[in-house]
Image 1 (cartoon, rainbow, N blue to C red):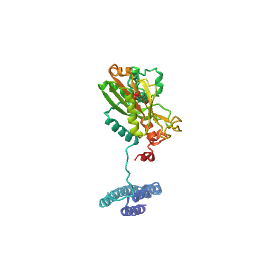
Image 2: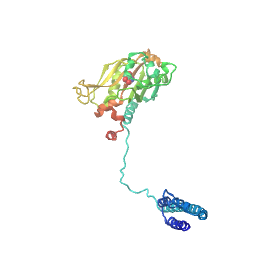
Image 3: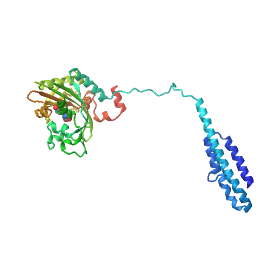
Image 4: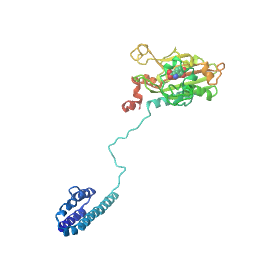
Amino acid sequence: MEEKIAQIQKEYLEKISQSTSLKELDGLFLDIFGKNGAVTLLPKDFSKLPEDARKKVGPLFNTLKQELEKAIELKRVDVREESYKKLEGESLDLNEKTDVKSRIGLIHPLDQFEHEIVELFSKIGFQQYDAPQIDTDDFNFELLNIPAEHPARDLWDTLYIDNKPQTTSNKLLLRTHTSNAQIRILREYKPPIRMMVLGRCFRHENIDARHEHTFDQFEIVYVDKNLSMANLQYLSEYFLKSVLGEDTKVRLRPKYYPFVEPGVGIDGICIFCKGKGCKVCGGVGWLEVAGAGMMHPQVLKNGGVDPKIYTGIAWGPGLERILMLKHGINDLRLFRSGNLRFLEKFK
Ligand code: DAH
């Protein structure tokens, strides 16, 4: 038995000292101490030995075990140091050429369009105003002449936030339109006012090719003395002709919105059929791109502006709708799909 112990010791110390990798050392560790390892199996035969021999072999066995464990541990440190030294000798060439083609990003089509609009309206004296996307029932509805039980609320399927409000007017919601800026603007600025508001709006919609839960709107709030529908017509033409082309025709059609009086729907002539009537415009020849109107006297009052002295124009198209029209896009959902093939078309 003593001989066997000496033989194992010699054999494995040699193997350990010759090994050059951590993987090799792991293998050796298993050969020695694994389930069927040379050292693991040794004590099995101890019981067959006479008492005297057993007493001698015990300490020898312990020494062997400790010695081999220590040898592996020390060799591990050596091997690691060796490999670090090798790495130090190597250097990383950051100038190395690869096959990866560089890709240049682009501004999202909605942002591109926003920049275009801001430029257009800055030219005629409008300033940008930011209103919150999370707002109160008051600013989004109540003060715009849309009280809680008013049937017109059905026009806006609203996403409310569960904020345990003390009153209905404090109820928080995701703004359903950029019109939530109207009262804030009236209260913050003195007429004459020329403001534009751009940004995201949200609705609890059944999503399809023409409806999304998240979309962008653009709002104009224009307050001065003696404004009329003629100014509104001019703004609508200025905008749609600049964006869709000089030959675009625009018409105003009576439409009800509680915060304007009179209210109108603004139609652009269908660019697909030039007014003849086609599938895209449902045979009408015109496509609605915005709602607008003369600001309701009550809304002006709610904003602290005297309707006997001042008049106001409020005007609000959806950005995706106009882009769809401009580029012949048939599915609104593409804008927020993250589909690179779609987005790259706007380079
Ligand atoms: N806020 C309306 C909507 O989301 C659009 C609109 C209609 C805006 C009439 C206006 C307006 O400023 O005067 O449907």
